[in-house]
Image 1 (cartoon, rainbow over the protein chains, first blue to last red):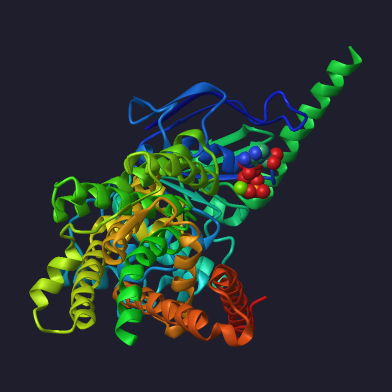
Image 2: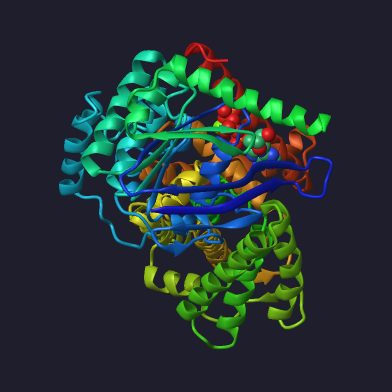
Length: 264
Length: 298
Ligand SMILES: Nc1ncnc2c1ncn2[C@@H]1O[C@H](COP(=O)(O)OP(=O)(O)OP(=O)(O)O)[C@@H](O)[C@H]1O
Ligand SMILES: [Mg+2]
């Protein structure tokens, strides 16, 4: 599905602000994978998703998605098969437009022509789809999305993203701005949509519990690279304690090898 | 008098609708308008005096405005310069181009030629001139408004509506935001030029300086309209712009005719327009603050 080979991203190269956010990272994602990604602030998680979605281009390395070389493909073209949800609930929808207009934009990917496709039939379809969220939004098609709560808005974004039938779903701390109850609702919706559509997904989270509970594979990132990659049974048997211990083990070996380098 | 203000306002409203598209829908403050308004006037005037015909002339005026808008959007997209600068560049270049269109002159009179205005008055027969024109302008601006409303109900129009608010969302849906900007800015300037074409025929001449300061006037009209009522329906928003344009013209009329009591001269009207925009901004800001305080934000 995704083949990333030795990708590096350096921001502001050649200046005092030079900063390598992704360092020689390689990653292969299988179709149907649901990957959770953890790592401390600044580890490069968002940058990795930005590189995959194409909102930034790599300094070096190659990237293949669905067998195509997309290393230099602009974001809007990749968006044809990528669905993306951000931490900020306002980024996925337009608050100035009504619910039905938002849903209409997302009902089909790609360039929009001069057709008036929003009709009674489509509205009915939207209503039926909104029922799945169990938030009463099916009665608010004409309301501006700006009137919705953050949780409602994020749930709507999720629904719209899934309805546009992406092949790959990128979630960047998409429940971090929500209260615990709404976060649970949006997360279980995520799980349901991923299962129903058998979507390949990558989910960044700071919640270790969620990272372990969801998905079939877990990546831990640190300083621009993947330092831990667990899947299968090992992932199933993971606990927060084991994960934290592993993290320290890796960090420890790193420090000792650094020290070794310094002393020799 | 009242008919005169209404006709003035309705011609002006077509321009204000263009300003509404860039400033409000696209969130692309476009200053091309100051040049493209005169371009529309010049192209229509030259087409008519050279015998191309009234309707082809006005269509050509619309197209020339759209071309000017495309240039601004492309400068912004390709060279990654801020939209304000892109607009100023085009506007400046248009000043020279407008004089070239006018055949090296700064203005041209539309005397002794048929214009849309003289045709309409002919059709009106015994109805008083001003009333005929008023009915005609209501129909004309009404049609422009309805066409715009229909456009904003198409998939493309709805997507344009999201552009100014959330470009990321538009990109995420696989739409090229640069293409959307070209479409929006050119449509806007097409309307602006059409309004210029109409004004040239109404006042009987086209002038290279016709559009100086007009973008701020259009913005004033848009902002005045926004005070009238609140709505999220595009049909209501375009009505707001039209009412705002008429209101603006009425205010300017009173400024011109009764301003001398407070020592106001016609040359003070631009100052007045600027103050009007500033006051509108202050009022809008205070309203917003009160609104968010009520909702417990901030
Ligand atoms: N546009 C940018 N310009 C310059 N530096 C950037 C840019 N985006 C990210 N960085 C830097 O790249 C590094 C990785 O940032 P990134 O946002 O990917 O971290 P993250 O793992 O998502 O962290 P968080 O958990 O805080 O979201 C940071 O040092 C950050 O400052
Ligand atoms: Mg991040």
